[in-house]
Image 1 (cartoon, helix red, strand yellow):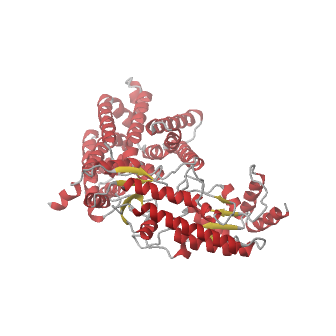
Image 2: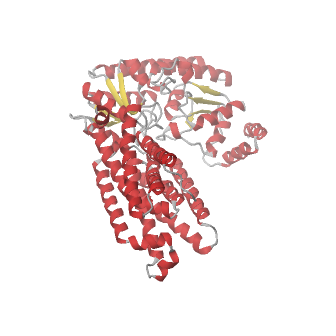
Image 3: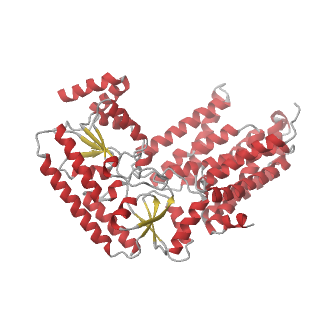
Length: 296
Length: 271
């Protein structure tokens, strides 16, 4: 309770609004008093990555919600401000939540952006691609950075051992994903928006294009983009278009039907864990198997 | 002439062209009444106020067209209620409902734990993804819009220019007003899915407004609006292809540019 009160004071120093938010969070049901350090990740997959350090990590963006246009509620902002560490992707992935993270950072909350640490790829258009989590080797760098931050926050645990275990987990994931994707012969990818750049780079695939030619869902294609995409599908005889749940499925079906040969529209989960959220390795393997199945 | 043909080489582009032209058929006819009667703000409010119904439809898995129609009815009902119970000006009533519905839509979408990437499609649309089913819906809408205008022409005309006279002539201006609102709703709701609410509203207002600069009588206004709208769709798709710009937004942009172009070159009218 003292812990909560000191946090309350910290927040109330900033703005009246922020303090009100924290009051509402304290009164919120279903939030047990934290025993260890409170770690929050922005997306559900990032929470699973941080969770591989044997940590209890909550995700701020509900599972299944598009991170690009997520609007944080007052309670989300309050839980941000009561966290000991917030793990984010950065590089613009979190949309308007990014602004809230900047504000929290300015008020002294520890926010760790993973994206800039992992040598991000440059998306077509020139800005860094934020979808770093589809490369387990990049997530090994992420868990190391999270482990270092945790060591600063909480000295009651052996973070070196936990970090080593998490890094080993990422390496094992990397091997298994490589094995799962090994048998795929047509190594060309078409997606709803540009989500698989890192996976392609790591495992030797080529991203031919996407329905929305942008690293964000908040774009709209030109007639030329769509014509070029359709041509690429025909030239390379690409057998599948991968679309996230709630993505432009009807558009994908329409393009698939115009290729002149059978093209499947396959559902993939790239930006959230989905209902079966057992862990990062399981999610990454499921993604690999879905891609292999779609192209195979 | 290759620059004109190549943009329409693919089936999706021809589908987009056909879909866009069918949207124009409905919006030019209905939009002419909207512009003459100064109901543009209501049209805008309807185009964006359908959001909560669509969001609920996506969450509960019923047809978004039904959701959008329910939203529109709630809006019009609310505006009428304010009109009857108070002396508040109509634009204030529209503003209240507009912002209320939009806020409700965002709340519903934010509460739902579902991937909401489609929200962008609702607002800005994707003309390039028009399906055969969309074409059928748009064609039916166009027929209803043109048919109703022919059927209610005298009533609409009197309502637009002299409401009191309409009452005297027994043309039931209340009923005519209701039919007109239903037509606006129908056009907006039927078109948003294929082209997005931004483009529906652009085509509802811009071509008839451009036509009002050059045509004096209602039928010639409708025909010129049809021409300006069709040109916006064709030119917009060609520009989108060659300049590599977002298709729906480019068509909307061309429609607005036409207005300013005509405004600039027509002989200035003495007031």
